Image (cartoon, rainbow, N blue to C red; front, side, top):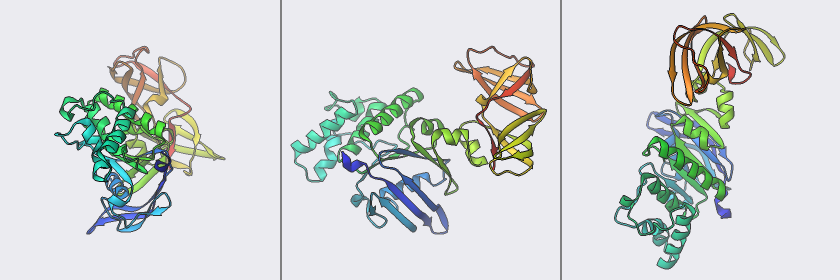
Length: 350
């Protein structure tokens, strides 16, 4: 399967529809054998970017490379990529085997060869024994696996996923995304994956490209984006974050003394100058206690959600959203608390 290990590269790519710019001067590289997610809100340009890789849209400016080949002007049929759509797009009148064998059949392979190729990919996605079933006889997760097998059957250089889990319920989404990630890892596939679901992106990705208003807001590993967002948009979009006003008092090398209410923190200044700054504080980067040093507050609301407890706490720097493990001691409404801060999950926003 060496042919699937191909990088994808965008060099200053833009896509315009008349006066509307859907993708604006975007550059990135998807390393061979990795899964990179395009993440962002509706209308940010992520799906257009995926379609530009596939050749379903043609770039208005810039260059697109798959492997060493400039594919900017090539049609979708000539790019050696496959896409798994949100709707699965299975043929209802065909069996699982016939659906997966359809690609090789139209490419001119003999029926026996096409079915042998299909059977191998059906086995890879864990559906052996279901070859004769119709799509209507399968669960949503099984239908998604058939769609993946069909996309893999011709062993494309790049595999594209367009919101592949949006039609599944929450529990099934978790299982199928684990299946996709395992398959991608086992076969060293080069994958571009589009979603608007932050948790999904964090769970499956080697790297995430966060898009906003047709541009790239930040590129990084899931942990880097969550722990070290580079701007207010990424901090607010990736997971939950408390954005609070603070004052940068003094700088000392790479670090700074940050005043938040009656609490002083030592953080990386990330280029910020002395004066007012915004701080991103993750809900799980704070701990509640009944006494001690820290930021004083009053619990306004407490919610038990099984794995976690969620709190809204009124403080001198505003109302903070805080999470704690579900088995921890509960602080009820109107409890007086002290908030302490972790060493990570708290950053100055440049």
